[in-house]
Length: 242
Length: 395
Image 1: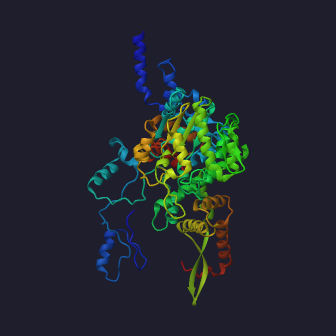
Image 2: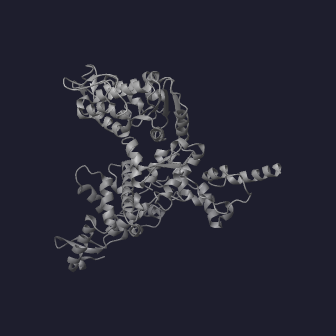
């Protein structure tokens, strides 16, 4: 993943080398985000299977790659990157969003307690249910987490656009990243604000996740409210120029 | 023919390494009938149907046996560690693993000489290795064999976070803890209901101007008095301990004293008097009486103790050895004792634990049942039982 530089004008450049040369030539442009690594640095590998392949199975390209890797410089791996079998990008993202003040240890333990709480609640329901219902009850906390967040993603969003001195809420299509971000943000915000005093985050978050999995609850309601507002403001859709 | 048999057995041994270590349980007990090994890998056994702790032996090592839930309520009204209690509630069954330290202790207890002074056994080990659950295994055995179990689930609860400290009526220098004493008495009554009517008190005890317990009345009356009048609960506990010691010396019953976190009795407390002066543990009547109980000046039973750093006060996190946690005073008071080390899981036990969680569908992550997942769990937990349980909880 090469480091992307974002220009003040909004264009993206292909390679960091070309970017540096362009900066030196054109005095009007400045680099907004930059990396300490030069273009000769490679990204670190996390794929364990890649390193363990015996020499006979490597293709020509892979052999060349490996030989090149012995002499080339490699960037330091970020702290959150793992080769763990249990690493989940969605869970990592939610943990980072729940983190306050940089205490990743606390955020991770809260996430672990949430998943445990979800699993225990589902097990209780499973043991109390009859044989036909047991087939429908989902006990995997990871599937519940992913499905709940998918159910909370809005399809269309609202963006404030300035026209004639007033801001109008204009319905706008959202990218996948924005939708996932909004789902997680609403979930975490709801758990922080609307809870009775002295309830812990894992307890509240597990409850909200199970409700969202069943398509009920305040976060789903917020998504529907967003859709209704977008529907109501559909006359303003032509204010969008992109 | 014996030479060919030996050759056959030797051919068998290198191949056995490729199977699960749990399979060795079955393979070693059967005679090698044929050289042909089964095509599929046989499933490792992690459970045993033997639910009587007296019959547990080396062949059951690494396997889980289940305690009926009805027995749990009478034998362990308070004694299970919180995470294990959650697991019992989730799975609907209480399964303990049979491990070497517990088997060793059971062997010693089966061979106790009731005429010799009570031997003290001390379970020690690093955090999360299974000291409390080994103690629970031993208590289950003693309860099944009609011993009177005196179980203090966590001595640390008596030296910290006490809401009410009263000046003792019996001895002006000491302090009473009515709440802790009454909860303990209630649970003692649940466990040993059938003994309370049989044991008769040997002395007359006067509680106040109007109430007294006559000599020869059953011990149940003392317990009732302690539960009714909460002010006298600590003195009732002291009387119960004294009477039980006397009765076991007379040979009328077999007594097991089981204390978890015994290092609390000789450490420091976080309690303060009204004038904010600190309270030493010997000034607490409950601790004073328990220290006398843990002394080996009586016979007719055994004393099983556990060290615990988890609830301890003013002790570093890495301390787990007896002299580190007990201090000089405690070590001298408990000397001589039989130390029993409880360590992390060996590969067979780890495999058994892993299979147990798989059977109960506790490991829900897709990668968890794979070889890769198992290796990662082994690495992350370092075969520590407590850590493994916490990791498997969210996977």
